[in-house]
Image (cartoon, rainbow, N blue to C red; front, side, top):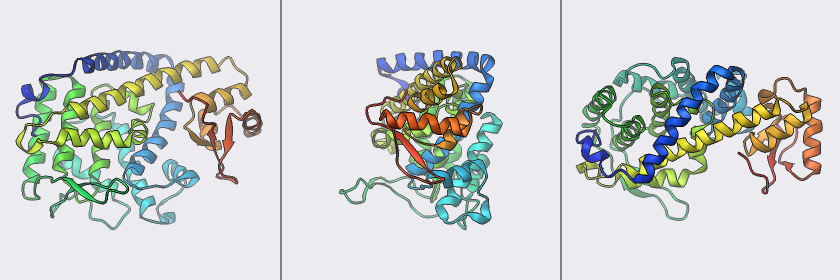
Length: 358
């Protein structure tokens, strides 16, 4: 709530370039609505791809890694709870369920303490960890940069203060949003910063924060996170993600902090998302006039994740047969545009370093 008690001060001195970025977001938001009406099938395909990337990336940010076909199997439901091999797979499935719940709701609904506790409970629902409860012991935010050792960089409020602080944050956010007290993206940025500063849970704070970010973006009409994985963009810029949060948390306890390092990072990440969304829509429209083998090449070189599988291609191009995909990949390998990094049923491929992905 420290960002909301004096919102005029918090939102004062906004960097000029951030205003330009916010305007770009609002243009992207309008075009997204147009595409939803004109290209529903394409957006459904993009949403299916983005969903798996988001589950994978948001988990990986916290060191919860389930890679390859195994992760995809859990994400799409082929691998069910009795088959989970370890805690990583159980937490991966929990994040899947929580994210799916948010997307199904379209982000609608007022934020409540009960809802936030519910998301954390779902996140750990396949584990033995007690979910849905606030922290009972003091926790700390540490910098664990390799080679630097574990250094405490922020001490969140005590467990005794956490319930009232979180409850007040929810109230202040809803009040500010209802009154349009600031640009929706700035209010979302302030909420997420305060949530992470309170650090209300023993475990799962980062993942719950990203789930809430997805929910609030959808509620505010910024649905790009359904079609481009914002979590993947954060993962690819993980150091800047942590640096921006650290920069904005300095002085948070006494309300002298600046939200601009963090807000700038989040807004610019959304801008990247909308840019990628536009490029993928344009590329997909162009590919409709191509032969099936050409469509495989266009997808692999322009729209697939940097490392991808046959399943990624099949999901993106449902009308293209597996033999056609194999032939196209063989040609791309011969031209040194892609390389195979693993073999077998779970074979993974990646683009060559000189090939640009949109």
